[in-house]
Image 1 (tube, rainbow, N blue to C red):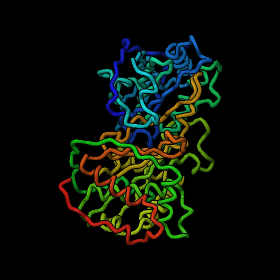
Image 2: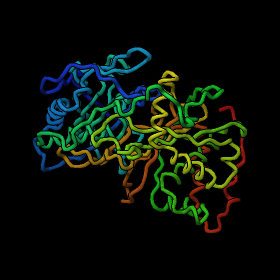
Image 3: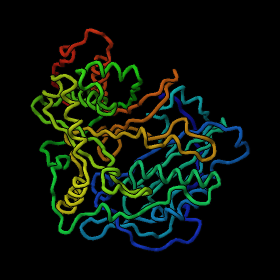
Image 4: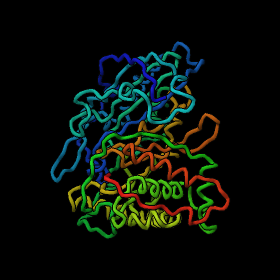
Amino acid sequence: MATLTFKVTRQNPQLIPPAKPTPHEFKPLSDIDDQEGLRFQIPVIQFYPKNPSMEGKDPVDIIRQAIAKALVFYYPFAGRLREAAARKLVVETTGEGVMFIEADADVTLKEFGDTLQPPFPCLEELLYDVPGSGEVLNCPLLLIQVTRLKCGGFIFALRLNHTMSDAAGLVQFMSAVGELARGAETPSIPPVWERHLLNSRDPPRVSCAHHEYDVVPGTLTPFNDMAHRSFFFGANEICALRRRLPSNLQSCSTFELLTACLWRCRTIAISPDPEEEVRILCIVNARSRFNPPLPVGYYGNAFAFPVAISTAKDLCENPLHYALDLITKTKSDVTEEYMKSLADLMVIRGRPHFTVVRSYLVSDVIRAGFGDVDFGWGTAAYGGPAKGGVGAIPGVASFYIPLTNNKGENGIVVPICLPATAMEVFVKELDMMLKKDDDMGPTHEKSVFIMSSL
């Protein structure tokens, strides 16, 4: 599929303002929203097949009008970010609107292959980076491109300024656009701003350990010649990994199991110094960890990046359950107090970036609901992140995305971004982990370090 090329004809980008007048205000983001590690644009893509019941209806016009209506309720998205004292980000609700591109592509959905998964060919044509539109400050907070396909289907691609929303918040907005496109007068979930709920205390006090923001010595080696690949984990693959665990741990979550496996394989692939610390950051949605929970409809960033840390040698030479134990403990760290402490840390330390030296970050969007967004043509054939390795540092992040493969198996697809030489090692390690031999024991999991210049 990577060899597929096609031509996309785009109209000039336009701004879509709210359909009705909206208030002009200055609305501060929360102290979780405006940390350095979220000051980037994140791409999402949705593929929709032709729907005979929508014959003669234009997805571009329907979605454009629905966005304008949705922005009446979500009017901060139509504004622009400004930076105030102490690097505080504030939305000026100017009502200028979000950027929208109408496009046509001379390709059918079928030509993308039996299984839709990242990396997608010609992504930069399906989500065009309008020059001057991608800065964090003073730029549109959303860029949306709707591309009609030759077969009657279409592609909805979106780029979000991550400081405004997390996956749950973005899906909430997209679902509202879908509901309004299908004829609703108002979104079924009213949006809730209330960013003060995730602000620092007065006075701020760091009461928990936040090693994800440690200052770690070392430099980020620029990765050249990056390879992008996606890996599918269905029931068979997950069972093969579970069989590597002691019986008392086999009831662990799929997220924890998969994360332990990928962290281990990736670390072996990039072969750091055996005595150096390596890190896995797990994105944990904290909405339900507050008492009372955050309001339904809250669409800001409401997650933390708790981190598990190990020496490379211990991670790679121990059985899989060593990594699993570290990850399970780390996820349970996220409490209401942890989130308050995190907001306090942001204010005290000037909104630092999470540690990226020898770090890997995973984000589970399996239940986020991207694929369920319906603009009138039904649910998406693929919906979710457009690529792995997003953010300021290529290759650090991976997403867990729900997928039905070409055999009809439901599972999880994980886009991985690594230097090409490391990718070859990663694939071999993963294949060994997924071997279904019944006589596997911990000795099969031993990996020998091969030092490299990566």
